Every structure is written in structure tokens, then in C-alpha cells.
Length: 546
Image (cartoon, rainbow, N blue to C red; front, side, top):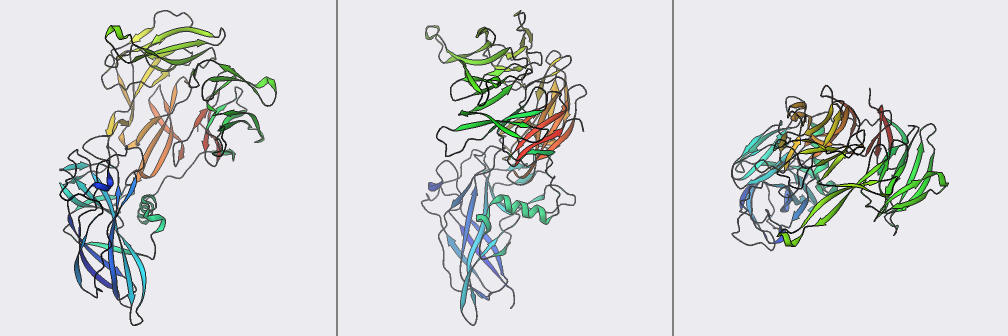
């Protein structure tokens, strides 16, 4: 049977949405010039075109987009045999004449079609679907530079109004090359069969495009699996022979009890230590003492009491931060401002709890950043973030803290501090990026540099091509830090790979330790030679030195 091609002109008047109320919005109309190729049937009984809205104007750049179906009325037309027609479509509940917001957001849409295929001479019919692989509809309220793959990726210029964003295989492996096409051009719909797999989700569609271009996706490499259990948080034992971890609570459990377990690395044996209702925030110090939180307080885990372990409540918040040497805990206390002074609101007071005496050792005003490896307290001095200075308080002497600053205006608040042998360093992610181009929703999130707070000198470590950088939250170690570096090959933050990288703070170099399909909890071994990684399919151990 011969392949038939039909040119259909479709005016979409209700396909665009913006703002919080999706149901009451109608964007400007446009004409869709489409060609449908049917591999089996000589004519269409009817055709309809549907639109998916990709809500990227409100999604943060490090999140997957939300997909919202915009209802489009079915429009029945006479059987089409080698001809063309103009089909008027309209959305439901829309307000005629309303314009898209002028706030600078780009709106993205995926268009697909459904039709009835009629086979002659029997007259039998079936339903078929057509899609536009690698071709998305974009609305720009004004001329916009679009850079979806990060500040070092390809850019395209989008004119005001509707355009097609077409992607195809590039000359070299990597993100697909983008071109902007006028909506006056005819776009070819591809027949995909009698159903839309997985509701035509974005991730599988982007994966298929990339595989079709033979673009290599970094393979997952987490090291050696030592357990098939799922851990949501984990710490090493003090002697490095085992790993303690919290298993996720059963969703059907009313107490939401998290099971704390111990994994013995020599033979892979697992034992339950204790179950903690609303267990969270597992921590351990250099002596092997463990702490965990519940819904209200922090608790000390007594491993000497047998099984199950005893839990001793400490009257401070569950998210308190343990010092590496196990001497102190830092926690926040919100103190209301004196209304007689004319001020309103509250200030954050950082308390330091002395574990040995069971009472506060001291209190400082400002935002806690983290401990140094020798357990000196690091915090932002004062509640005024416009005056950025970093102070390090020695808890052994309680002498006036050493202060660095004022720091550069681009220093993030609160800071992320790491430690080389000469003292603290501030981490910077110097490159901004946004999937929306004109109005960045990702401030200082690409690349990595290290800044000496004393001299202000900044050393680059990773450029923007390394991807979006997320600094791993681990107890402080001397001489290196860990980061997750995310790169994506598909549009809308899809088909992404995450590299766990070890950054040397002395020579400002970085190398990849592991590769994952998402960010995962990690813990560094006591000898700083290995890292434990908690994936959904098990716990892995990977060397940090190879």
C-alpha cells in the first residue's frame, strides 16, 4: 500500500498557558503547518492535535519540568485523501484576547496528533498517533537568547512570538545541535503507532533522540557493591571496618520508624541496631559515637547496651551539628527582637552545646557554616548579610574569633567553607545559568573556584563545561572536598549524568571518583581513602585515591 502524505494547517488558539491558573489562560493564536505521513491507510477519518505544556517558566533550573496537558477540542473533518484543510482548534475555559505575560518567561510545548485511519476497500479503521521528535514549540514574549545546556553550551536566538526549536545530531558527540525554525515552515509529524508510550513522557523521548544520534552517555560507576540494602543516610565506623546507616521508613508505618543498621564490610553481614521513630540526621564522631535525631530532639546511641541499642535524649534540636572530635554540638535558636527597639522579627543565635557538661558552652549571633577539622566553629559574623565577614571561633580558648572580611559581594550566603593546611577556603560557583535565558534562575551554580578569605585571591578549579556543581555535605576533612557535577544531554534537564569529584585544595585540581544517574548520599572513610555511596539498589564503596 502506498504511503500517503497530507498537509494540514491548524490554527491553535488555546494551546498556550501561563501564570498560576492554567485553566483560564489563552495565548495568542498561531497557524501550525503540518504534514502527516501514514504508512498503512489511504485516508483519515478525522484528525486532532494536542499540546503538552512544559511548565519550565516556574520550574527551577535544577528540577525536572512539570508536564501539564492542555485540553484541545476534537475537531472532526471529512475524510482526507491527498488533500489539505484548515482545522480550527480551541482550548477549554480560556479568555479570548488575553496575552502572554511579559515577565520574560519562555514557554515550551510538545505537540502531537491523533487520527482515525481508514483502510479501503473494507472500510475498517484504527487509531494512530503522530509526534514531532526533536521539534518543540517555543513562545518568547520578546527576543531572547536561549542557553539550555549551561553557560558553556550552545545558544540560539529566539524571536518574539512562536518558533519551532529543532534539534538534530551534531558533527561531534554531545548535546544535540539546535536551530530555530519559523512556524511558517511545514513540520513533519512521524507516525508512532496505535499508542503513545508512557504518555509521551519527556525523558524517554529525549533518550531516544540521543540514542539515535549515537551520543555516548557516561556509564554509571559506583564502585563495589557491599550491600543490596537501601540507605538514606550513612556513616563509617571509627575503625573503618563497617558502615552504619538509616534505612527508609515503611510508608505504611504510622510511627515512620527508620531502622538503624550496621554493615560489616568483611563478610557483608547486616544487623539492626535500633529502630527510631522519625529517625533522621545520622552522625558520628572520630571516636565512633553515633547520634541520630527524631521528630523533636537529638539522641545519643549507646552501642554498649546490647540489642536494641539504648537511645539517650539530648534536649537540643534534631538537626544539631556534631563537631568532628565529638566534644560539641552546634544548634540554632531563634530569638525574637525587642519590639521596643522598633525592630520586628527575630535573630538567629548559634548555640554550642558542651556534650561533657550537658549545657551550653557559648552562644554567637550569626549563621553557622560548619566545623573545621580540629573542631573550631565557623560562622557568619552578625545577622546583616550585607556585611559579609567570616569568623572562626576556637572553642578551646573562647578567645575573640579570627575574622575575615569584608568578603566580596559575590560570596554566597551562607558560605561553604573547606579547609586546606593553611586555613579555611571559601567555595565559589562563579557561572550563572538559566534554562530561560534572560532571567537566570540558577545563580552561581556552574563551575568551581576556591577563594582565600584572607587575601581575596580566587583560584579556578572547574570551568562551566564541568556542569552544575553541588557541594557535598560531609564532615570537614583537611585537604580535599567532594562535589557532584551534573551535565545533561537532553533538553529540560533530562538524560543527565552526575560525576562525584574529589577536589584537591592544595593544588586546586579535580578528578572524577564515581558516576551516577542522580545525586546520592555519601560518606568518607576515617582514613580518607574511600567513600561509601548509598544508591537505591545497594551500598557501594569506591576508592578516593584511584
